[in-house]
Length: 271
Image (cartoon, rainbow, N blue to C red):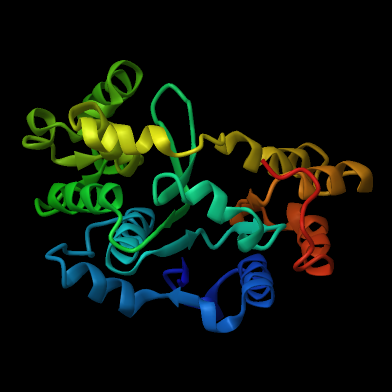
């Protein structure tokens, strides 16, 4: 199955760290297994499903596309800024097998899942239902909450704090003009609250917190890009993927260099 990733403007126009991370994935998993999605293909994928890509943010287009690809073909989605430290075949099958699907759980107040890494077997029912619900939500044209009036943004923050899954409920979605940043997570949450079979499938999935994938990023920020080598190695080998941030790419030079040096080496403390 393919590994999918995306940069809206194309790989040639991507930041240096995105290109380096892409090269690491290619070296680790094989070029024939990587499918890189860019602008024209992303627009076609959405238009073919009845969604106008023009008013959507780049983040929302990527969220829709990751579910479209996994629903159609199965495989694994990795964000373009997700740095690997262990080959997928050393750890993913065990995590994906129980439910036919794997994502890192994110037990924050407003969402139950992180979506920077998603993996599914072809025909997975949870992914199909999630895909259908999110694309149905965007059959109605909607704008980002960044464009909403101040009062609407305030109401959004209250809903996030009290009942975030309700953003995807029929009652709220029917009237909503604006979509929240994490609507993909809220859509899954809403599905699991109302479909016992999908909730049971979700419960079968091993729960691995996504918080562990951002510890390396936090350390790089804290040390202004110069973590001590022992700490860097411990964090890098301690988890199989690491979510970085392209807006501060200089902070991750040492981490990416370590990944380039260790392509294909299995981490010592995989969850």
